[in-house]
Image (cartoon, rainbow over all chains, first blue to last red; front, side):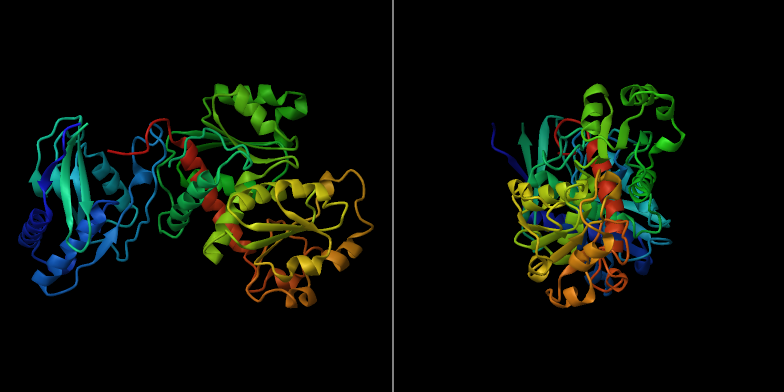
Length: 176
Length: 312
């Protein structure tokens, strides 16, 4: 098996998140309306890190939630039942601009499930999508609003992330 | 590790890891019950048949609500109004239900092994909702869930099951689940209802109630199952209450943090004093709430197909 390639190292991840944060600021004039919702597992630390950067820019705290999407997936009877992670949405999403945060955007099915799952908590004014890596191969008409890095991939390649909230981490591309 | 079973027939054949997967999944479903919108689409398009060939209220209602909260379509089938009265066999009834493309069959039956039998003749997922005096797996799972939630662990805890053990499927499932998870289980009750043979299941048997509950972290009370007893196993209900009922005087000699559990229906004034059933240490109603979450988790896990758990 060939050695995995490092696509993003810790510095590049931080730089990408900083740029995404500034793009979120540029797109959303009313900072008080913006909340971040991370999708487990990879999106959760990313959402927290984005929130930290945003709260420095806006000089006010930015609310962060965690949304497990497994109960809303469309392939539940095709694979072993997924492990369900906690969902914590400590705010009312109604009227808010919810920025969904995930690590890798691939088929788009997770995001569809996430939009469905979010509806159970209220009616957001807008939903936007931020991802660290867009690897292509969409199966649904879904597009990210904020992308850390576009990585053209083959279907048999695998992207893995090692992320920590303290800023450590890297993104690897492996060929199976 | 992920879940790969097609049926939930008993606890005896499950591993500690599998039981833990159910408990972890149930925790997520308990949280769903606290949302404004308590329904998720996980079983959308699936049909569940609740085949209750023996009367049941709380288990049937709990399963029904669990199925509804997972967006399944439901058919209820009970003894009172069914073709069993017309002489149809269990196998034929089940096959007819399967011909309607049922995906899940939840069965309660007075014959031990009825769910196992169905799992061999049908393609649908089979869930045992209580078979004779054999097992009641979802009750044991909700008991384990409640203990773990309240005490933070199960391994090393002293759990005393008090009452009619011989005729109790709850006791058998509880013993399997709790011993697999590392609890020390003590059984207590009249010698006729708690024979020493239960020691083979890895628990302790005693007929001294005060000794049985003294060091218990959990006191799980069971109802006397009059409907399963073919002859009188003890002189009178009054004597049972006097010798084994949980009253204030006995409770005073237990550990102050010992929890009182009961699978219901409770017989106030028989196995438990009315005040104790409603006291702060009683988690009887929380068991009902947790039962719903556990049954949602079981349906959700069984619905999973083959293949890896890893999702792209």
